[in-house]
Length: 116
Image (cartoon, rainbow, N blue to C red; front, side, top):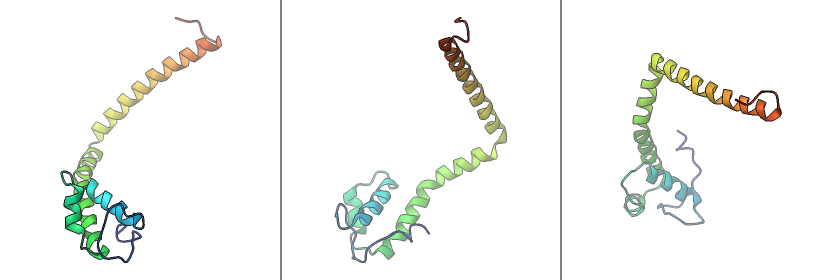
């Protein structure tokens, strides 16, 4: 839905690096970034005659397909409470250790503690 609302121009055909069409460059760069293994020339050949009405759904589908494995992994991790608790505990232990060393160094530097 957000892709459909992107500001675009009324010029038919899509092109890269035209200073008068920054929206085209931006959306084409997004499309390129979610199409691993494809080149700019390859993509330009695919989209050069498209209108924005043709291209925006193609771009939206490519983004959804690119993010699908990431979302799947995210939902798997979020569903595993034991794993999340373990990660939180380990993170808290590391943060506490670092904070203790930093606090001790600050106390020594200010003369509030004896160096060890």
